[in-house]
Length: 270
Image (tube, rainbow, N blue to C red; front, side, top):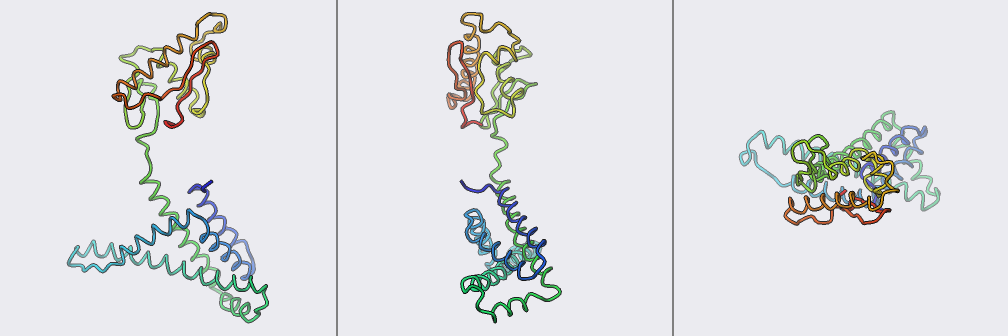
């Protein structure tokens, strides 16, 4: 299962925390090795890197200030510098990774390489520089994830029910369930699903529980054919949706008949 963007962000933050916790410079370099290896193998990281690279390529094209105006030119130049900075630090991480990989493969027998690595990164500022490197790279990924979330966010298409106005919002459509202030059975069923059970939208809702909890009927099981009221209300909801979406949506609810009847939202609309 693909990792979620949030889990990916958490993973990168964990690497940096682990880096800061380690005391010896060699252990810190081991963290860098594992960090870069993770970035090289995680599919989401590869996807984000491809996007960052494409943008870098586009910004790398020379543009003369006279072509776009000095203010836009300066803005493009700042973005180019930031992109170059990102790739410069990625390259630094890659160099560390490659040297540590050689040490791992030779089982630490190359003592000169080991000593050179430790000497190179044992300067007083080395820890801060490596930490800054991770911060720059992490921020590049985090920014790209935020941009993707903003672009892909389909908030306007989320399914929801406006209890006060009696409106169902579905795939960007506004479905009127109640006209005027009349509380209908269709309204009550949607209120029970979307308001009372807002954290359980994927559940099945039995007519018996709706009768007891929303309609305050305590004798549902003792009344013959009482399920019909709830089945009819579901048909009414479905009919309103079909009519107001010009037959584009005809499978919003999944429901059946009988005393043990139930209703649920078609999961493709959640």
